[in-house]
Length: 278
Ligand SMILES: [Zn+2]
Image (cartoon, rainbow, N blue to C red; front, side, top):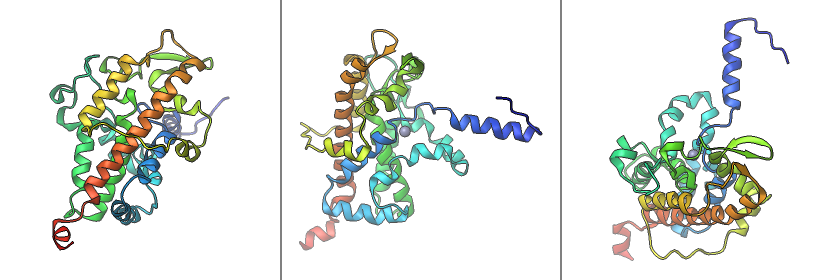
């Protein structure tokens, strides 16, 4: 194909389009994973939380958590959100120093620039009843997305290979990287639409104890270390995807349960005043 440019402006526009078409780095669970986490969480929150969520979602012109779950990634291709997207790009992941998977904020989350600090930040904004609804709704759409990201094991991988982005692999004869495989291919290998897939993961998940976002990330990191996430060779075959899929599905259910519990804590409590009346 030969493309003739009439001006340098055209070349720039073409280059910009090409950049938009490139698979984005560290884009997190693809749309399927994020929608599943959101929709499974939506179904687990209390009635009180649900009502409050509906009110905040109304501010965003949305009606379910799944509607807003991919906004934090999708804004990358919206020129109007370029500044915000750039300013928040490091909030989607945390890169551990090594396979000890120890969260040392000074080293790996300086200035709060990682998914762990971002979850705590947006949770505080969402839970602040004195903040404006628009601000809280904005925090909600980050939070729903980022809790999902913290459970994609390679969003809490190692700095050395940028969470698998630099770990080259081959899938179906094409070059790719391990991070991208985990963002989309592992779940896509189930060949289900997201809503049907979510329905099949709806079994209740019992967690032994509540953990905080630091532990979520450390746990994700240990999965990359212990569970064969790094394949023996460079080829990603069906056997690899079949082996990894239950791990990814468990992470989706875990993310949903933790997100629902977090939303209940932030939105589902009656105010002290209301409690003293009832
Ligand atoms: Zn993301």
